[in-house]
Image (tube, rainbow over all chains, first blue to last red; front, side):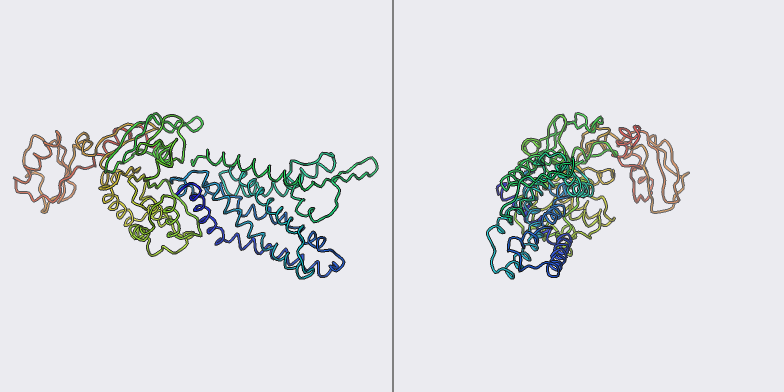
Length: 264
Length: 303
């Protein structure tokens, strides 16, 4: 059995553990509630017949970035730290398998479990669009593709945070704070500074819905008296580059951390 | 089957947990690794199983470096280190199945191994709610699956009830006929009972590596406890130049202080039997390994 096959073995059992756990049920519940609330809002306050399918999809997919972050925290937040905190490292690591294989097997399991989590929302989205418009435009599929890329990169980044800590609760809480507060603050700095936040993954994630907007402005400058505010929206290619960069850099760093991590 | 430890050292910040330890063990036997808390026992086992990386030195298992070729070194090793935990939503059968895949061994032994550790009834239940003792049994099963040549066991009876402890000791006695077992423990009686060799460690330094039989001779007890079938009278005891002092414990048992080694002990026993006493048991007051431990480590203060 080569290392690739061993990686698939790790993936298989990790994934099985994820899909039997409570987290996937909680993820489904949150996704379902979000779809329900948004559906009710749209039914009662939006005239969908006045919207194009892309406009409808853009509104419907507004919470998808948040759901993606949530899924990443659920299935990757303690993926590495948990091994060391709960003691499963004592079961898994003293085996004739390279740590790289363990890492990628776990990554793949986290990715697939999270994809199933947000997949429910996409299924509802496709159902609603097909029901209302009878067809799925290519831009919506591109949006799905960008969402999958965002998920891959945000899980890689979550693995990086998870590799930094040995306590699973700390790693989950820290990751949650970083995604929901730190990145938002970083993004908002651009509003005043006029400096494009190309270094932010949450900024890049806007492309998931921007791809549904035919013509949008990259920079919007608003003057209020002496104050000037900026609103940046990444180009699609730019968003892709940022997400790929996050995916590669985070994966390499977290892999190096995991391979050198000691079970003390 | 062989483990060779070469000048192994491990430092955590400013604390030297293992200081230039070297030893070699091979063949079918059980080697006990003894020392007080903080001696460096678990650190050594973690270094051998690639859970830690040495600051200096290396270890080889079956000729392969644990640091450079760990997948080859661990190929024929079953390990139980500290208190392993398991993925809560998997069953013992699935956990062992994963290990079978990773070690490229046949899965047909799973049921047998689970039966061996007394967990066959639980094989299809999720491990999340198992007790500490049950998890320890599963951990032992993980180490045993595939019948590996070498077993590295870190206090394998920890967390088990007395019956479980006895079962595991019997199992180790059976396994050592076909395997090299390297077992850490702080239970001196356990080591005396199941091991063929002992390595003693204190404050990260190796103090002793010898066969149990040699230790038994080196650290002979000067006090024996004798139990008789009948009630006894101290005054009527036979004279012997080897007997320094006799103390009554109760009407059936006495404590004799003997001057001399094993020969002197044998002479005293012979004189008791010749005098018509019906001796039920005749044994040293303490086990040899305990005396060795107290002599080498005891004075140092156990942390």
